[in-house]
Structures are given as C-alpha cells and as structure tokens.
Image 1 (cartoon, rainbow, N blue to C red):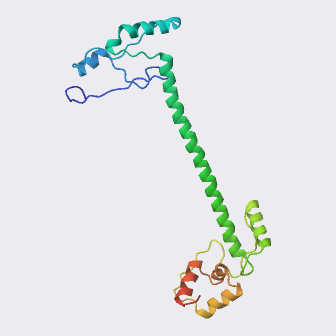
Image 2: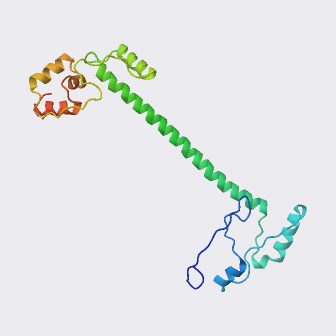
Image 3: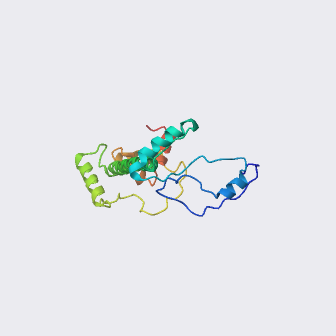
Length: 209
C-alpha cells in the first residue's frame, strides 16, 4: 500500500545475487516519490573509492558527518555478512539432514528386529527359543526371503480368511492347538485359522489363562 493507503501492484523484473544490494527492493525513484511523496532525502549512499584509500576515505567521511549519524560499511564486509547468514542456514539444514538419516536408519533397524522376533515366535519348536533357531532366522533375514517350510495347517499365503463367529472354536479345540504347539499362541492361532488377536479374544471369552 502507498502513503495514502491505496494498494498497488509490484512486478519483479529481476534479482541480484552476490551483491551488496541483495535482500533489498529496488524501485525507480520517480515511482517511489509518486507513491510516497512524504518521504524526502536519501538513507543510503553508494561510494566508489580506490581500494588502497578505503580506510582514508572512511575516516574522513566519518569525522565530517559524525553529527548526521553516518555509518560506513565496506562492501566486502556486507557481502561477508550475507554469506555468514547463508552458511548458517546451510549448516542447519545439514544437521537436520544428518539427524533425519540417523532416525531413518534406527527405524529400519527396529523394523528388522521386529521381523526377526515375529519369525522366532512363529518358527519356534517349543515354548522357548533355542540359539539354533535364532541363528537360522538371522541368517534368513540377511539372505532374503525365508526358506523355512510353512506350517502344516496354516492357511495359504495370499488367501482371505473367512469370517468366523466368536464361538467358532470351543475350549477343547483351543487346548489341543496349544498342546500341539507347546503353548505357542501364534502357531496355535495359525493352526486354528485365526489371528493372534482372535485367539486371545476367544481364550478370554472362555476364561482360559
């Protein structure tokens, strides 16, 4: 909005990079005074001085215009300040990227560990897991798809489980499945064509511990 509170459109026609003017909006002086007639004078000056006399010119102008509040900033220092801000942002993004990579690797490790534990439960031959079974599962996880034979009465992979009512299995059937799998509830659920949650629900419903 201009000085009178009226909105106007601004068209950006270019951008400057690696310049002391970057980060500033440059507008034609005639257009600026037309939009903001109450603004007078200049707030910034660009001085061109030989490189070997910058310090001398700076000292002379600072003494002469001290009462006017003159502040001189060499172009090299201003560019270094811009680069310092840019490097700060780049360093922050690099730290965040490294943290994201670390968290992603940790998450992948948790997923692999979970798969190993699930397979240990499913492939356990008894109520406890032996060192041989642990070694077998870890090797199969590292080499690719598991080569262990499927459970005899488990449903085929990719098939849809039919709907089973809550009273589909009685206490005797569940006890037989648990006895056959040495108390392994995950394998017992597969033998019964149930999920582990469904088996737990039926055992709770039948007051089985």
